[in-house]
Image 1 (spheres, rainbow, N blue to C red):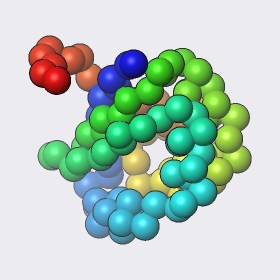
Image 2 (cartoon, rainbow, N blue to C red; image 1 turned 30 degrees about the vertical axis):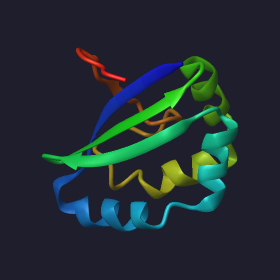
Image 3 (tube, rainbow, N blue to C red; image 1 turned 90 degrees about the vertical axis):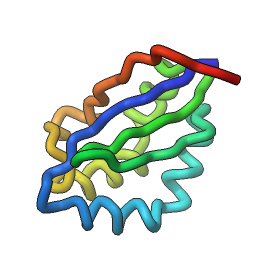
Length: 104
């Protein structure tokens, strides 16, 4: 199992929009994440960044699956003006975080 943590910058004036969309994440997107092998997925806000944590068996496979997903593409399009990253080339580029400690 892989543990993935990431940071995504959010445009300062769009934090409330990010909160709003994530208060009602589409069931279809949650189902796509599950089909991609993603589980135990949480997102937190910290100083203008979305900090995500998830578990999966194979991050490369999960990313490839979501990269080909029409549902994921629609979700990304909804956030193109909210996130402070370039979404024009496909999946949002995640800034992976280095894990320095883990306790089961």
